[in-house]
Image 1 (cartoon, rainbow, N blue to C red):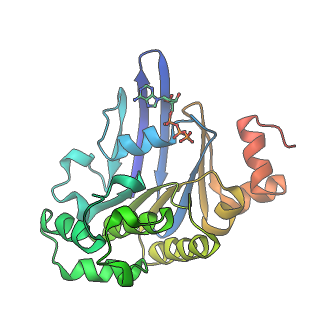
Image 2 (image 1 turned 60 degrees about the horizontal axis):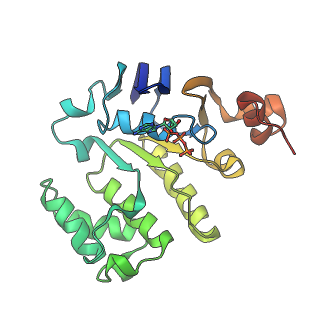
Image 3 (image 1 turned 180 degrees about the horizontal axis):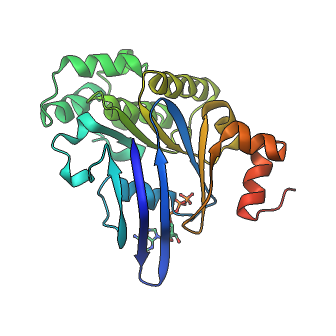
Amino acid sequence: MIDIRHLTKRYGRTTAVDDLTFTVTPGQVTAFLGPNGAGKSTTMRLILGLDRPTSGEALIGGKRYEQIRRPLHSVGAMLEARSAHGGRSAYHHLLWLAQSNRIPAARVTHVLATVGLHDAARRRVNGFSLGMTQRLGIAAALLGDPPVLLLDEPVNGLDPEGIVWIRHLMRDLAAEGRTVFVSSHFMAETALTAQHLIVIGRGRLLADATVDDLAGASGSLEEAFLRLTGGTPR
Ligand SMILES: Nc1ncnc2c1ncn2[C@@H]1O[C@H](COP(=O)(O)OP(=O)(O)OP(=O)(O)O)[C@@H](O)[C@H]1O
């Protein structure tokens, strides 16, 4: 469960996140939508303690990130896929992460298989395609078997097979009872993947609704998004 309560973040005169309040519940995929610059990445960084809120709070399982004793076991995140150490193999990148978080090495093999990188485990990460890098980022997020997952635009750079794969993975992770919170720019894909939506614009909450309710009311999710965010259909 993720609880966002009156969360506000200002950078100088820019209000990136403006009094946001919403809850992301377990057992379903919740998509986080908004136009460029709406505040999605800032919100995710605030949830993960990578930035401090100006006011309000973001809680994971009732705690602020910095209060969580073993974070990888509580929340897995993929914010920027290209953060892996390029000279290391996929296996050694994950092993280093596992060892520094007291996670057994067997988990490394397990998550590499889960994301379909088993055969590429010994290859250096700097030779990976964007799609493989995304998969490695997801493997790292899954390493601690966390009940909460945050994925920032995981579909970016994936080919059609990769998109279908990640759709199924996210739905399976949610069906296991996890909280899956995923930002995206792709409405058609979101309509197929998510059950719930949080839509923001200029840092403010525009909608907190089921995909069926929102898409049903406007004909399609794309139209609902454009209506909410003030964009114009072509
Ligand atoms: N470190 C920072 N310093 C100053 N301004 C920032 C900083 N981070 C974000 N912003 C500003 O905050 C606003 C929200 O940015 P953010 O990256 O959170 O939006 P986003 O919804 O993730 O956008 P996108 O869809 O383009 O990734 C933007 O106006 C951005 O320029």
